[in-house]
Length: 400
Ligand SMILES: Cc1cc2nc3c(=O)[nH]c(=O)nc-3n(C[C@H](O)[C@H](O)[C@H](O)COP(=O)(O)OP(=O)(O)OC[C@H]3O[C@@H](n4cnc5c(N)ncnc54)[C@H](O)[C@@H]3O)c2cc1C
Image (tube, rainbow, N blue to C red; front, side, top):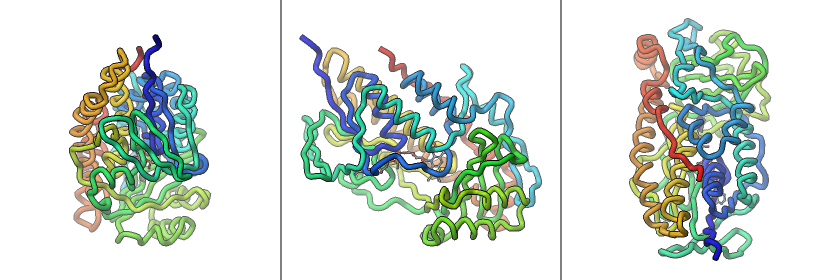
């Protein structure tokens, strides 16, 4: 008799959903990803994958780990990120190469599109199916298979529903109902710019209520993110092109190459998003429905950890499912999902709250806070207070 193959539907084809698809398929589940967007469109800016996220990707699939290394910029052991004041004074040189894990697992800075393509290709190669242009509009669950309604009206059944539908998750709304995400007080304008820049290993430039982070993504190009303190809605309502111009004006007195980094970007690639997070919650499971990635623990981008946490989630969820569901066809979803929740809630809550705190420090809104941030960076020799501790994380092994 052949062992039963359990099925999983993953709602959302972002970093979290695609990673979950790969990890679950590798563990022997039949996986379908349902993504609202009609196709994977180029997505302007970049991502920092820190050693914890890279370790999670490696654990899912050595092919994925290799592809991410080939598609992005692997941070070498002696690389330094330059921390600057808005006048261009060097506050410190951060030894980002030292974040690598003792086994050599590095950080990778990568265009978001390249990361998404690598994840999508790996999900497909692992046997998952991806259904684009479809919304999961409703579900019902008890302790058995989940019944799902797709936007074309069709009804589908799956043994498990993984909700990786992002910060505005409709599944979370239904499961937890904890209102809207909370505005963090700043917006993000971001893109990437080809060229040869004076800081080949990236920089963080710090002004009053503005911080610009830049990191290499190959061929001399830098991806950049400007975080700007502002009332909600102010920057998104400008639209991409006007936001790019307004940012260039705002930092017009900063060193010329930083201004050029902004003005030389293709306006079509510029993204503008108000930054939100949520207070952590301890419940991510309802019957056989489970939250993952931003749907479970949306966090500010201040520590560059949200996608890394989604990668960690995926590999931990797959390992608990393998132990309690797949091995021996045990099918004990309840124990698997509780074990996942137990392993992930505390860690992600801590990182979300540290990110929130780091975001406030980073913005340096007002002369005193600006001075405090710049002094902290000078004294510590790094931008982030807690990043070194967070990136030390070991992935569970998934290989059979
Ligand atoms: C400015 C900024 C900079 C960032 N920088 C970093 C960084 O350097 N490092 C890092 O680790 N993280 C970073 N992040 C965070 C990171 O981008 C996200 O945390 C990460 O993409 C998590 O993705 P996700 O898959 O959980 O959600 P998302 O990427 O939001 O994906 C959710 C997907 O679900 C789909 N969807 C939603 N509802 C439905 C539905 N009902 N049916 C079907 N599909 C649906 C959406 O179309 C979307 O594709 C940054 C975020 C921002 C805003």
